[in-house]
Length: 184
Picture 1 (cartoon, rainbow, N blue to C red):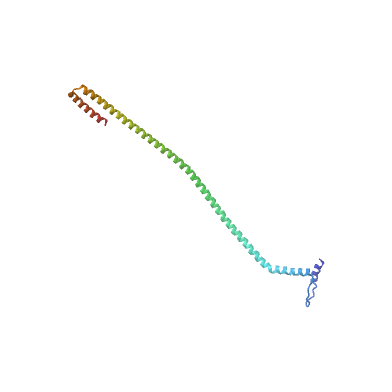
Picture 2 (cartoon, rainbow, N blue to C red):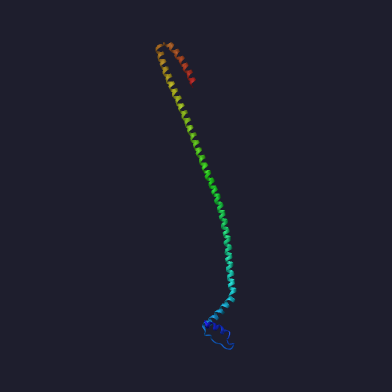
């Protein structure tokens, strides 16, 4: 350590111009060289280093500004998406409610249509039954009338003479004609 301090002290006692020599003390020369290099670097490198740091600072600030703008844009898009989501959820609820009410209406319409169809079928069945019943009654009446007429004619034929027979047949034909007009 003494040699290092001696080398600094010896710096103050260098011989003035005219002599040139080598300092063989490695530690002393290295420290001198290092201090000269550091001094030159600080003196000349300060501006370059300041420029590099300023450029880096500007890039960082611009990146921060861009990030802020992107964040604001993302927040706006998120708000828009949330608003659209709320709107879609409201519409979905409306469609769901409308769908349920539409299903209920369709169900009621189907039930009403089925009831109407059943009522019409019941009316048609009753009309058909009434018509068939009337037709059967008319057929029975017609047969009974024909049988009664044939029985009466048979009885008349056996009991009457031809003149009386002829006048009875004419009267009965007149009655039958009148009955046919009434039944039609």
